[in-house]
Image (tube, rainbow, N blue to C red):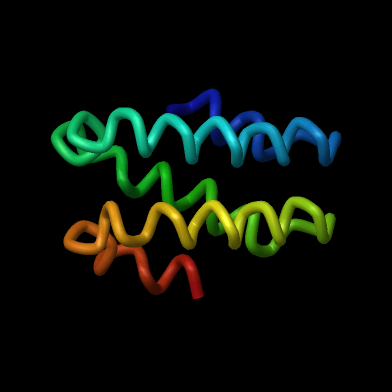
Length: 85
């Protein structure tokens, strides 16, 4: 999980863009493990960083990936809504 956050801090927008793709794919494939191990905060922190990124491509990619993730984690999303806004 830390590697996702490290990649979201990269100066290269392409690395940040790819990190959003990877965290989204990971969350979809490993939903139960993410919830069980309480990594939802890290997942949504990555999206929050992407939503305020200085690069518009990263912003749009974060938003579209988040739209796919929200239905999967709706019960576990409530504590993280404030960070996403």
